Image 1 (cartoon, rainbow, N blue to C red):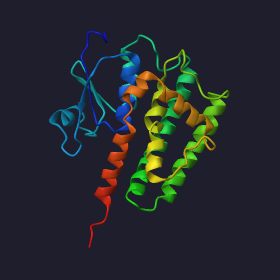
Image 2 (image 1 turned 90 degrees about the vertical axis):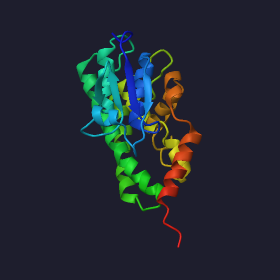
Image 3 (image 1 turned 180 degrees about the horizontal axis):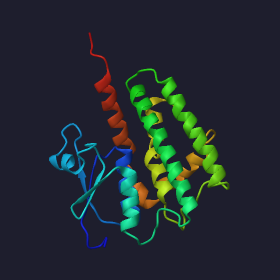
Image 4 (image 1 turned 120 degrees about the vertical axis):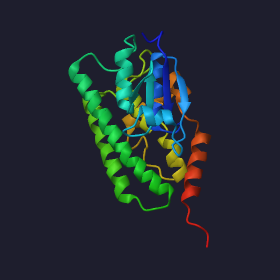
Length: 232
């Protein structure tokens, strides 16, 4: 089905949720047309395909739109049934992977608010502390429940569901922290999550889809300039 179908992805290059969809397509080896959207001037197609949220990503498969990044990830895995398979066969493990993916997604929504306000130069201590507490919980329980022996290896196994979610939200965090001179995501505090993210960054399908450091730094500078107070 996948080889004969047409696949398009509407997104914005810097979005972690769009990266999630790109990674899901890349790792499965699915050819797709990428359409960059300007969220300040949304296309008629985007508004037509996602009239409820009016945001990216939107996957369009044979003319049928699918919105929301995690739903897109599961749709890809269920539609293109060839390996690699993103979720474990065991129902209990599938539930665990979905649960921790949701926790990481929720945590990084908090992080996004905190980092944006930090780029703007506003105090964010409460927001950032809430984020770090959630990440502390993820580090502790994912290690205990899924990876008691440390970081998973991707030498002979392709990344799966939880890997894709984790990397899409944490894969470029080091660049953002370097820009803000605000280093909290460290191997000392998060030995599993940091080593896991680094291992994923070396996977070719992931490396190819990840925005470059200069692009991200330039975007952060633009965000900061836009939010500087006007000169007197």
